[in-house]
Length: 156
Image (cartoon, rainbow, N blue to C red; front, side, top):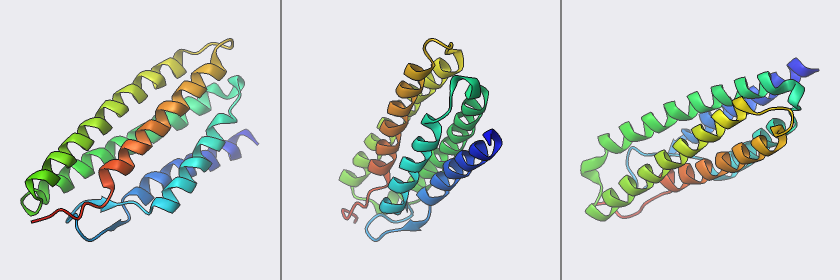
């Protein structure tokens, strides 16, 4: 049972990261755009699976979170590369917006890392609170990702 829950949760985390990079929309060349509806559903499902881990399943939860963070880091690097490749096709305003939203995403990712470390260090007594804080940081990071990958019709 525990392994099947871990497998399902891991699969949801991986498919969330994969769906973020599905397609490109008009107006923002070379910036991968998420399927907003699909990502939202997968993020909800991922959090639903994660929040059900008990303190006895802490090691599995921390491992799932570690893998999700690694996938997120790859997606952030890819987004940076996509922005760099399409830089000349963006207006000055669009460039500033993309840089700002990328910076915000990286700030949210740092906060998520801090909450991940707290999750790792959580004891039986504060496990539920650590999960809640990690989940909150997870949602904030995902919103920053959506902001970065939102279509921007302001191109030159």
